[in-house]
Length: 93
Image 1 (tube, helix red, strand yellow):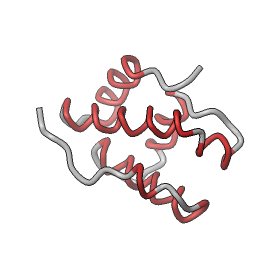
Image 2 (image 1 turned 180 degrees about the vertical axis):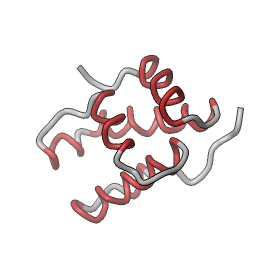
Image 3 (image 1 turned 180 degrees about the horizontal axis):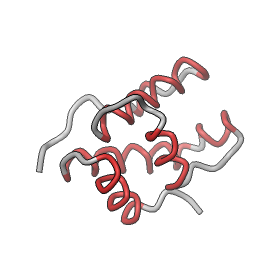
């Protein structure tokens, strides 16, 4: 099982709030990260919808994009090469 955009969007917004635009950019980045194979190579586990939600829940606070960037920052510190998956901006709506 990999990152499933539809279920991830519903669960992401229900759990962490945020706008539609924000959750969609998080999902896009999650799919790109999963497709890259980098997470699986570094961590030794497939990136799944459940894994994304668990990791974002570890962030101290914030919207989906805040939580995503916190997690990507942690991966960057631990392994390097994750900066490209960070979120700089998104459209509200």
